[in-house]
Amino acid sequence: MSISGRLTGARARAPLHAGLFETWLRRGRTASSYSASSEPSKVRALIYGNHGDPAKVIQLKNLELTAVEGSDVHVRMLAAPVNPSDINMIQGNYGLLPKLPAVGGNEGIGQVVAVGSSVSRLKPGDWVIPASAGLGTWRTEAVFSEEALIGIPKDIPLQSAATLGVNPCTAYRMLVDFEQLQPGDSVIQNASNSGVGQAVIQIASALRLKTINVVRDRPDIQKLTDRLKNLGADYVLTEEELRIPETKTIFKDVPLPRLALNCVGGKSSTELLRHLALQGPTKPLPERTLSIVTFPVHVTPSLAGSPE
Ligand SMILES: NC(=O)c1ccc[n+]([C@@H]2O[C@H](COP(=O)([O-])OP(=O)(O)OC[C@H]3O[C@@H](n4cnc5c(N)ncnc54)[C@H](OP(=O)(O)O)[C@@H]3O)[C@@H](O)[C@H]2O)c1
Image 1: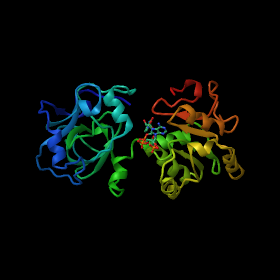
Image 2 (image 1 turned 90 degrees about the vertical axis):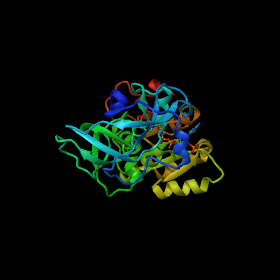
Image 3 (image 1 turned 30 degrees about the vertical axis):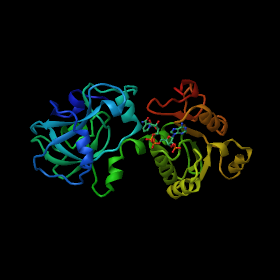
């Protein structure tokens, strides 16, 4: 993944008026207007010129669109989420950082309004998502280059389309890249109600893998348990339940997990480790000692290399 220059890849200029964020919020505008037209309109973007607390450094500004030429694609954004990595990027403590000033947001769904003369893969009306991180999706419109975009089918729910590129892809890669799991094998994960965790549950279920899902306790734990089970979770346990000996009875019905997915660290990751099968690695990685994947981004094949 790479971060490109001027306003993170869009062919947009940013001479700009500060202080519009409150006005924008007052009017109840969101990034998802749900339709694209070729009417000229004011382009608004959430931009940061310095790293720091997002509440302090992000400003709503007006942008001008450049003319659409050659391989350019004019896109109107329909929806764009806020992911933890977006926040980390603004704070300046993420592995990939854009040149500043930058438009926030790394994923989202947009609709093509117009294309340049040499664009071959996309046409007006198509839905597109960013091909990689750093595009700056928190804006109403932009002119991007064709290669910065991937066309996707329009028959999927808008919110799913807007969140297709980060969490489900991460979940899939973690399930298939580190272990060669077979139907019936099990996977254990913490923060299972996170966006990534829910994607892990659904993809694992489709792959006929059993999931043991650890969450933090809460007053309405049964509601959360039911929701995750509806997604395909086999077991949902609180961090505390994972520590008690009775939990081991689960492993009369399912094999010990050969893969653990950790995005919490500390005691929580230690508890995942305690339940891993011995000799987890099935791939010939000599440095590898345990099949625990700690994320974000720098997914490490051994606990020794983990940032946690
Ligand atoms: N390519 C990648 O490497 C990649 C891609 C996507 C996400 N990620 C990473 O994956 C993680 C999850 O991302 P997401 O977007 O799915 O998150 P999310 O939907 O915002 O959910 C955050 C999760 O973290 C849990 N949590 C927060 N603080 C905790 C703590 N102190 N102890 C235990 N659990 C805690 C929350 O549990 P509660 O509900 O109990 O608060 C929730 O389950 C993040 O670290 C993110 O950076 C990595």
